[in-house]
Image 1 (cartoon, helix red, strand yellow):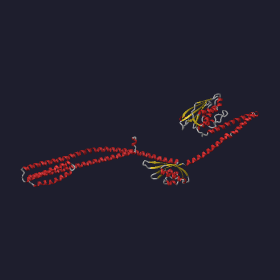
Image 2 (cartoon, one colour):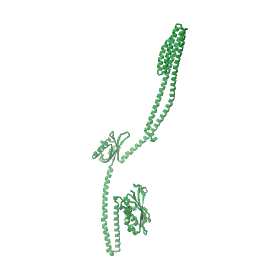
Image 3 (cartoon, helix red, strand yellow):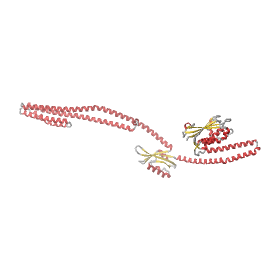
Image 4 (cartoon, one colour):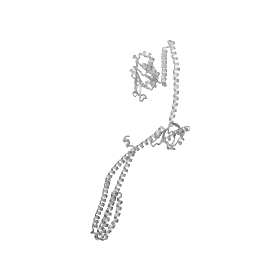
Length: 595
C-alpha cells in the first residue's frame, strides 16, 4: 500500500494519536522517576546529615568525658565526673541510633562494631586511670601507661569516626553526582519528548481537521445524492426498502409510501401494514415469497398487485439482495418498482401485434387476389385486344388503332406493375432462412434471365470472384437481376452498355453515413455502369417505392425495382448506396455483413 494511502487512513491516525498519548505517559513516567530520584537524593542527604550528627554527638560525648577526666585529675573536684556519667548513657543511645541509621550499609555496620569496641576499650581505660587518680597514684607507671593508652585509644576512636564520616561523605558525593547527572539530562530529554509529542499531536490534529473537512464535503455530497435518489425514485416510480435480518425490522423509503398512495412515513414499516395494500388474489403468493426470503435470505424478482385506498390497482415488481456490512450484520436491500405502465404498454403491444397479424393476413389475401383475380381479367383484356386486331384491323379507323395501341401499352404496364408489386411483397417477408450460397452462380443465373436484352444491346458484363455468403438465394438473384436490368434500361443511345461488378471487404468504421454497426466487417459488392446516370441530389429518392426520375414515355418501368433492391439488402442487415453522374453512369454499392 502506498505511504500516502496509509497516511490518510483512519487506522494510521489512530496509531499516531495513541503513540502521542504513549509519549505523554512516558514523559510523565520519566518525570515521576526523576522526582523520585530527587526525593531519594534529599533523603540521602538527610540520612547523611543524621549520621554525621550522631557521629559528632558521639565524638563530642567522648571529648566531654575526656575533659571531665582531666579536670577531675587536676582539681580533684568530683563535679568534673558528671559529664563522664552522662556521656556513658548518651554513647549507648548514639550507638543504637547509628546502628539503625546504617542498617542498609554493611560497611558502616562493620565500622560501628569496630567503633563500639574502641569506645568500650576507651571507657575501660578511663575507669582504670580514674581509679588510679582517686588513690593519688598519678606518678605511678601504671597511671602514666594507662593515660597514654587512653589518649591513643581516644585517637583511634576519633580516626574511626573521621573514617565513617568520610565514607558517608563519599556515598553522599556519589549519590549527588549521579543525581546531578540525571537532573541535568532530564530537562533536555523531557523537552525533546514534549516537542516530539506536540508535533505528532499537531500532525494528527491537522489531518483530523482535513478529514473532517473531507467528511463534511462527503456528507454534503451524500445529502445531494440522497435528494437525487429521491427524485430518481419519483421519476422512475420505484421505492427502496431494507430488512434488518437480526433485528427483524424494516425501513421503507419515502417514495415506497407514495407508490402505495400514502404520505411518506405515515405508518410503521412492517410486513403486516404492507400486506394490507396487497391485492387479495396475490396475498398468498407474496406471503410465500416473503417466507422464502426470510428462510433463504434472498429475494428473486417477484410480481404482485396492490390496491391503493382510492381503489387504483397497481402492478409491482420487487427484488432483494443480501448485504453483510463490515461488522457482520446482515440486511437485505430491496427495490420495489411500479410497472403498471409497462403492463399496460405490453398489453397495447399485444393488441397492435394482433392488428399487424391481421393486416399481414389481409396483405396475403391481397397478394392472392393480385396474382390470380386481378391478372385473370387483364389476360382477357389482352386476349380480346389481340382478336380485335386480327379480325377488325381493316375496319378500324386510325383513331381506333391508336386507342387499341394505348390500351395494349396500359395493360402491359399494368401487368408489369402487378408483377413488381408481387415481387416487392415477396421480398418484404424475410422469414426465409439464410443459406450458405455460391454468389457467383446466383449472378450467372440472373445474367441468363437477361440474355436476350444483353444480346440485343451488345452489353459487356464483367465480374470479380465473389466468396460464398449466408444469404436468401432467390432474393440475391433478384438483387443482381434488378441492378443489371436497371443499368441496361438506362444505357446511353449508340453506346454499348458496360457493367462492371467488383468485390472487396470494408470495415464498419469506413462505411459511409453509418454511425453505428454491430458488425465489424462487411462484404462490399459494387455494380458500376456507363449509362445515363442521374443527379446525385436524387441518390436517396431513387430507392423510394414508385419514385421515377424519368417520364414513363422515355423509359419503361414501374419505379419499384430499386425499392426491391433496398428491401433485399435490408433483409440481410446490410446497406445500399447509389452514386450518379449525368451521362457518366452510376455506381450501386452493396454492403452485406461478414458473418
